[in-house]
Image (cartoon, rainbow, N blue to C red; front, side, top):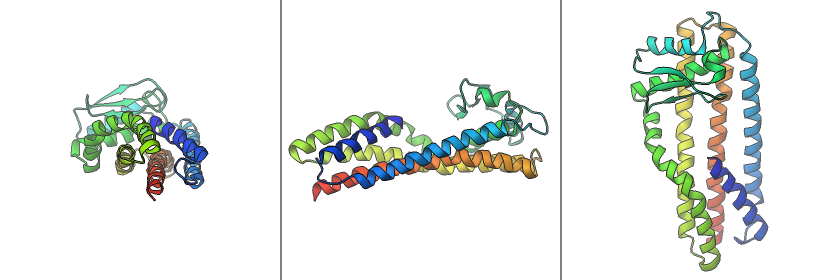
Length: 252
């Protein structure tokens, strides 16, 4: 995804400065710039919220790892291990080796923020166990998107070169299709992430692990985490729209 965002910046500048496409790309650049600013704000807020609720202890004194194991056990998921992974907010569920990976600030922490993150990742494990459709669809797209994200930059560069010399847009459209696959992946990711958070919060409440204001802390933590995926999806969509406008106007 980072490669694609870098490509957006490079080609936005190219089209704007040279006028090769015969259009003003100022509006598209402003849109992507606005989304980038929103993304920065959301990420900063997420880190602030996580840091704040990392100081609020869990009522039951359990660590993130213990909470994850308890949630998995009570949801009849017995083939998933909870392990530690290095890094900050690098938490994830890995369906390949059936592990819930918890980061330094979550695995051994006894805070509400850690519990919220740990249970969110367990939400993904439960999705996998139950065959949650959006997760299955996203998993099927992984190899396609992995290839497309690596190749898109070079295909678009080649497409721009061909457009400049022959006016043919076929290769450029193929590059846009590759970027569109990443956008589709980001869109499908939204229900996967929101549903995992819903599962986590529902269990935290139904198990009486968190209630009242403490539950609201977990909700706020997961709400801001989910918004980072929303911004990523908007960024991917804006990227596709930008390139479609370039190619479409070139054909006019």
